[in-house]
Image (tube, rainbow, N blue to C red; front, side):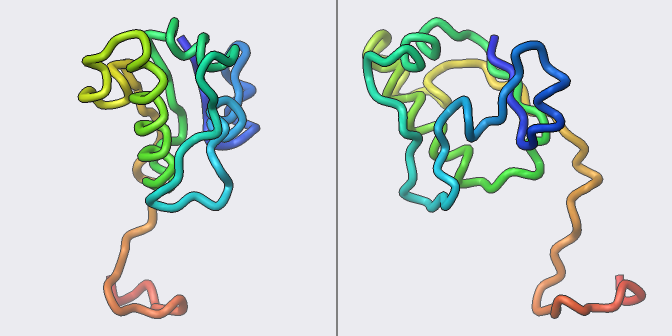
Length: 120
């Protein structure tokens, strides 16, 4: 099991917890084409191949491209051990996403940053 979080403060709540960017080498400027900086044969790649569960705290606060970069990387890393994992989400590793979805602000189409709250 690998516990990770979005912020350093919440990562302290897990035993041996780390931030997702630190653990998975997710780029800070993530795009749709991004992947994690994990090379085949490294200690981290071997750790991921042994992992069966990843717990991700504060998932709602994370950019979707971070998840997509991790998905692409895990499919690649795990597929060296299990060929069928390339077609499974996150390479077949079970992901548990946690967080408070009520903390996400609503998206109001065509609104400015100073959109008054009374129009909700």
